[in-house]
Image (tube, rainbow, N blue to C red; front, side, top):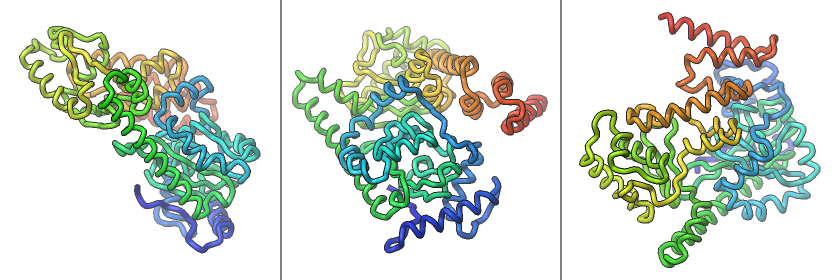
Length: 447
């Protein structure tokens, strides 16, 4: 874990320091403008830098509420599948239960800043609803600007934000402490744990408490994984039950979007694949019933593929997967995957099928294996990209469309930007940036 950042020093009066930072924040946010460089007296450098990021991401300090990223049905479905669901009993025991009469709220969010669980003092919960600090809301820096959950994720470290250090003015009466939650095996960020409230929320002991809770939860997740792995090894007859439990913890996955080399995660262990192995698993993951050698060659090689070359690649791929899990080694005749593998492209398609295009957009990190020329990969890439774009054009919000417009594949998408202009009110200050982007496209296409 990287060194935490917080405004409170040992022995200092938390309330006095909170007031100092709040006054500094109020003064500087009134005078501050995007693009301001250099340190500002009385304002922490990390807050200034976070404000700069917030402005570049088009967060609006004058909008009082955070946007709702998921409705109730989407939230319930997403929470059930999220790896952090398995360690929520630890969070509830160590943080939530003690907070019910303390004037504090405990929030647990995912790796992109969406709050999945919010609990704690009932009075504070009702107050927090006014700024949409609720489950399903987006508290990333891109949406609300500087806040402990969003900024902790942006910096990947523990952080405390006091009063008017928040970018959004409606959050100035609040203070918060947040700690990222890392996967104990791969080290990837799974989410964030946050305490929000009054000055108590940024006391030194609060930071220590949240960090200790996260460490305990990470350790518990690791222990559960080791126990399940032992069951799988020692009791083959119970593998079907163990595999089902293991899937809830590990979520065997294949990350293909926005990268040239896939990341394969099986039983909590992750490996980066070669470009060719990435293509093979992308294709097999899209054909769970398997493919013959001839069919896989046709989908893998742009010209006339050699079955001899394919067999050599499969031998090498099996060795890689053997190191992760012997049970996951691909079968032959037909070639197929013996374990359930969840490609991120499949998650996007599943979300689009049930109308959850906002979640689909969060999962979508860019084109699938963008440099691959394998026919099967090209077909899958175009299908995922096309369906996502069409869903957003037909039913996407302004924020969703603008987020999609930032992707490389949408750099010259005129229709998309015209759709944004149709949705924006005539006097919206956001229209200027969209018009400027259209002018940029016109100049670059004529060059």
